[in-house]
Length: 221
Ligand code: C5P
Image 1 (tube, helix red, strand yellow):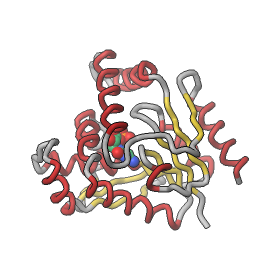
Image 2: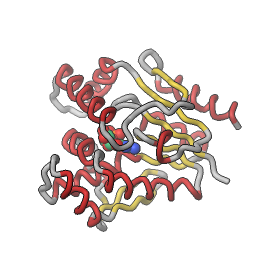
Image 3: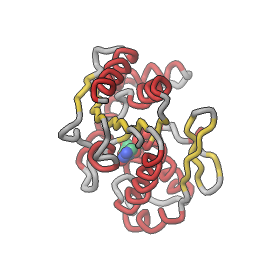
Image 4: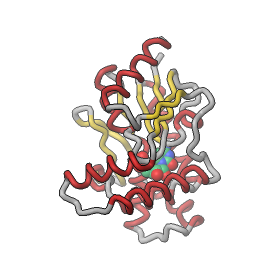
């Protein structure tokens, strides 16, 4: 039997940083499902598909072969034979991902892959629909959030550290727009599963959130 922890929440809530740390501590595999939607977005960008071309996205997504491998414990995304992991964290890929993620064929394809991965290994998986859709039987479900101001500030600091010039208000506007799109789409919108535990990280450090979730997991086991 394998264990699973589902972490959902809006963009920039710190899901991936926290999930990675928990995975190391518990010796679980960390599955970043956002990276799969981003890889699908990259495929659409490469094919010059318009983000509003719903029908075309639903057809052409069948040509995108997305597989996941692990290198030194780090998730790598292979798109049609090429490792695209390093190309996925751009604002462009994130925005496009939020458009392609509305498509039901795209979701079916990626959810199947995610469910297969969780069948045989202990996983901590993060995304928007993990607790509600992908792993409804997860041992622990967390809905991780923080105020849009705090999330924007975190992203701003991350970009500044990388030497990218950016505008805090612009980042917050983008975050709010992405939340709206993810929460209001028809298929698997972002929402807290009824049995998920809400963790607001606005006033918590990363390590405090990690400890809190590990504690919740241990108490359940
Ligand atoms: O988490 P990340 O920012 O990498 O996700 C990019 C986009 O992919 C999200 O804004 C969302 O639209 C989509 N996504 C999703 N379901 C998931 C993971 C990501 O719809 N499980």
